[in-house]
Length: 321
Image 1 (cartoon, rainbow, N blue to C red):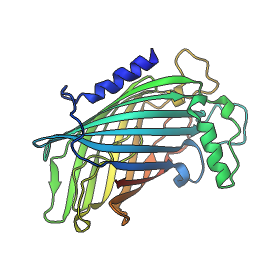
Image 2 (cartoon, rainbow, N blue to C red; image 1 turned 45 degrees about the vertical axis):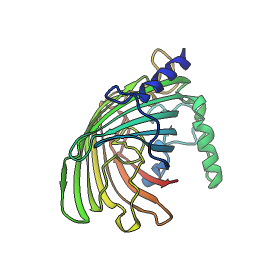
Image 3 (cartoon, one colour; image 1 turned 60 degrees about the vertical axis):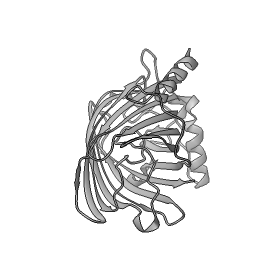
Image 4 (spheres, rainbow, N blue to C red; image 1 turned 90 degrees about the vertical axis):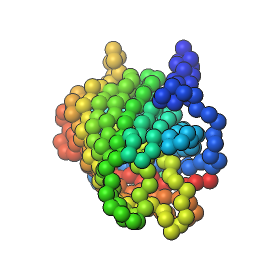
């Protein structure tokens, strides 16, 4: 049954958001990306501890001003409490949890001044199957740090199916020549048995040779996007500073609320409203046709007994082959 659901979900993405089937790839080459997020910016491992994602983005089709893109991804997220030495449940802190997933993201860009729409489907697993304990332990041993002792208390195994919907408006742009600024308001929603939310936000960019705003490479929740970028000569490549904000109404988060109708060891009540503030830089890397993005995000409290907001750093590297 689960295999049939996976097939149906991925088949849905083979059809455009307007219901027309995507043609075979017309634009050779692909953009590959690696994303790494970590709460080192906050000084210690806690709450959303780390996440990574590999991506492959292709331009699938062009019809007049309309461009369509497909991005395939594999990613993982890790969540822990603050107290790493306690092997018993820590009831006033974030539960241990992991989320391992594959994703297909289909993006439709209707051209200058028109909105950009995205539909994403994630298929994955929560719990020990997600291998978050193994990933974190390996990373800590590589840098000679002690490992967390309470992973036996993590949220239990459950297959997950998520659908992500987003619309991004692109008509607000100012400036002439190479230096420009733009504002991209957006609305989005996450639907599924892992995370349920409705979101509103926006990103403002200022920089040189601004390209189409296909979004920032980052984990959901947030103002996510596709890693594709235009093939440009070195003298005309995009570089910019950006600031983004997003507010979310959260209905359910499995890594906090636990699995429905199951007796997970540690659960916290998720906050009904959460916000992110993020600022950073995106620029050519100088090694072939590549880009690097660095940013810092401040995330508000995500559960009732969390004491402070959390700082999260993000590094994204993308390159064209």
